[in-house]
Image (cartoon, rainbow, N blue to C red; front, top):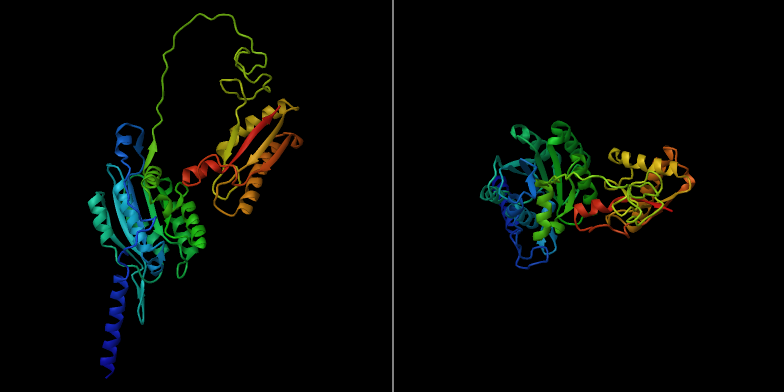
Length: 407
């Protein structure tokens, strides 16, 4: 009798498992997120020399835990993640790459839990068909969320991969049974192992706020990647921007001008000594030592910040040192520093962050000997974007402090 009951329970469990997989088939409703997709052809930009390949391999970690079966905008998050990776595959230009795909998620039984992470494709030479077939082999979503073990497994897979590597993590970031601290620690360990060879790009499926902060920390651990919402890159243009940022870099063409020797004539007047003759100087009386443009007008310096940060990165020290010298050499000149943020976060928090950024620049200038009474600060929060907040690149341009000389 006990054997019969046990068999019944076993078959019932198996039936529920199979029904769970069936329940994850695409639904008929078409949402704005899953509308028709036309990939942007990036091959022309590569062939024209506008961009060049910057990564030699990409590894994808795909969340297949139970939370990915939840609905989001008319589809399961698992379906959305598969569609997103399919669109990335369609957008990737023709270039030599190594690729791999692994999943994480595990299933609880009556007495155990298993299948923490699994490689379903590669690492191998990338082809669109090969990656698509690998994605089709990914099992249905279920169970827990051991992202830390998936990152550790990816680190092992990378050992035989040459060149620069883009690690792409697709997840909803829902905590449930996920170890946030463990996953961040695993990302930092991977970065310490591979250094500048690896960048981490995180794509969030859904809008879990706690998950957004957590996935941002994972991307930050990579140093050179970023986190982005899946909704932002589902369109043709959005996906093209993501692929460009993660796989390509812009080619800077050096223009060599032919030098024609001419006999010098009388030196034109330059009353303020800024290097621009008076007859074309649109901003006379430039402060001594200030950098000007071709019109003779002051150049507005900018300092850019990392996400949710207000510390000044060393790369901006030379420009700030030059600004400090101008202010010290011209004690009657005043400066206004305005702080700005991107649109992530509440308006109240962003307003405070923008003021902290402006004050950080002022504190640096004062530490170089500038009179603090000659500098005023103001915060605009997210109200004065310099670029779009719809893309990672645009948001990076908005996280800034602007220095303006006041005469």
